[in-house]
Amino acid sequence: GAGVSQSPSNKVTEKGKDVELRCDPISGHTALYWYRQSLGQGLEFLIYFQGNSAPDKSGLPSDRFSAERTGGSVSTLTIQRTQQEDSAVYLCASSPTVNSYNEQFFGPGTRLTVL
Amino acid sequence: RKEVEQDPGPFNVPEGATVAFNCTYSNSASQSFFWYRQDCRKEPKLLMSVYSSGNEDGRFTAQLNRASQYISLLIRDSKLSDSATYLCVVKAPLRDNQGGKLIFGQGTELSVKP
Image (cartoon, rainbow over all chains, first blue to last red; front, side):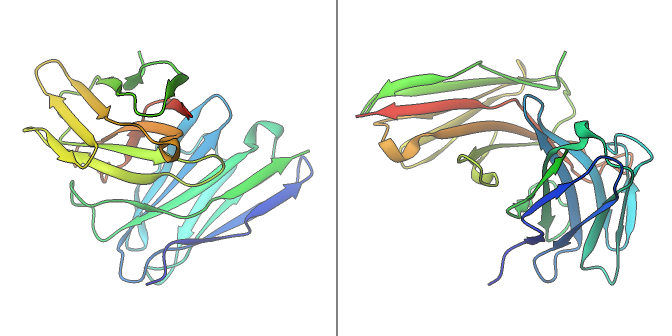
């Protein structure tokens, strides 16, 4: 079946612009996670959705970052007034539930470059 | 202190060598542990889960020591195709609405040479 998909695969933007990144999880997966991978920083958690609600937003680095999920499926991560330090690969993952032993399946990521 | 710490890399080994990766984690309440593999400019993919009793999958063996909060991965008879970055991953406990987020180590790069 289809895996997690993300769009766009690459995004180049100018400092100060807003960007939207999209994630389509595996069908039927209720848990959805956003992570960020920066050079030299490793992979870090941003936000998690259970259905349409986001119980844990603790990883969002600033109030310029927000995310929503509609219909328990597609999620959008929005970065307002982008800064150069926002340049990273943004990865989305989904899981059937939040059960401890469920694997999280990752999408291919969106590579964001802020000039 | 980082929540998940791994051996610094890179590891450069010849084909056929045995290589071991080590990892420690700080949260004693953690319940689930994994090794992920990440190829250059690709997404991480699950290599194997790590169980308390230790587990093996072909050439790969994972061990967990809860008392020492230590995880290891052993690769025997390494192949060229094993070249990748290996990520030690701990899942946050399911409490305080954390929802089982993954906490990643920095990763150890492995390069297997002919």
